[in-house]
Length: 482
Image 1 (cartoon, rainbow, N blue to C red):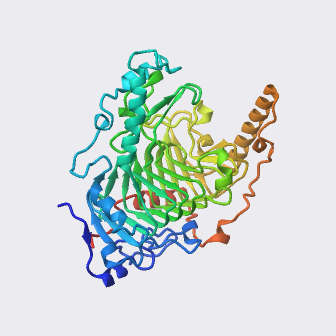
Image 2 (cartoon, rainbow, N blue to C red):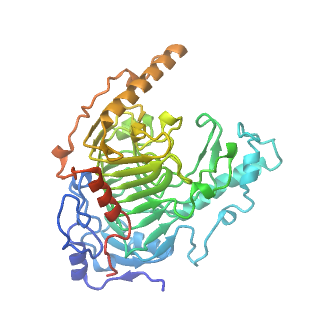
Image 3 (cartoon, one colour):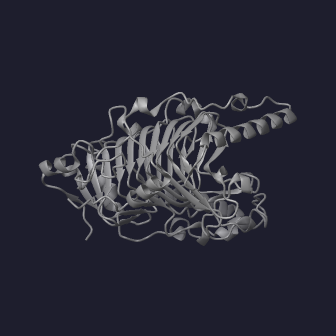
């Protein structure tokens, strides 16, 4: 039964959410330990700047249960007061492509006549250059791609306003193909939800992106732009039903990339904690800082904590960081060179995959993370890549169960990238980039312990792995319908 439901008892609503906007009934009798998945408040940067409470204090008519896209849109609007405290329970699966009357839209609904094969044919057989004159349909397909992308964005993008708790009920709450967005929103909690990355029906091909060209999809599972005080907890992010292995074949025998990021944090966003969540089966997973040229927006911001998360077959960006003081502790990273859907091929093996991305002016503190990488040729080279950064500090982490000096990997990769950039500048007769002239340092300019209280698990990689595998992801918290 479709419904938009408002709870009648304000007293009970406040008792459930407490002071932190949990938005669900959780067994708080579990033992309190260093790794406590039942915590009713975040750990890390989301506790700063006044803390993150979501929809705590919501009025009785601002507590909703929704099970369709239309109901979710109505609940987010909150009776015309979208920024007032609200708690939204998601019951079952909600489809981003679902119309108000229950129809699921596809590419022909958004852009009748769109044809991916015809679009690709306009680049020629090797995908090197677009020509309007290559075929009679090229101009039409170019227009259809733009129009269809805009129509799909309008349909699937749902904006989460300030002072919201969005929480899943039970073990099957899903947002499927929803482009969940935070734009200038503050004080937001998202918990116990599976977020399946949208499938972009209209990806664009760029022949000049990389050595062989690249597909660019448009929609993230969750995008945070200039947001503040966000807590993402016990969520599962995944490509879900639409892995790359089942995508149409594009140029050079590679699949068409129909997914963008799982979680992007951009444009001066601040005070974010991502905890006990899963990032599974995806190519480019989590981006913190949108570009090297965005320093004016991002310097002094992008304060993010990630702890007790699973990154499984997450080929790149777990996360990729620019500018921000980012803290990663007790996360479990795993991948293999021969995974059938999302193989990870490190730089040492001739690929470009990695777990942690040390980008421009990033200030990453990594502690007691467990990295596992299997398959022929697998080595600790996979744990980190240099992407124009020179500051990084790790302590206590493990690779395949043994202690690993991730800081040494970071230093080696910085020196190699710096030497390459300087040599390229000399050959071109230009000045080398400023980052390449820096010295690598483990002094990142900040200390998490000075900013917030936390207690990492330090005993072994097995302890971290077992905790994350048992406790991370959607469906773990026993949240019940109010």
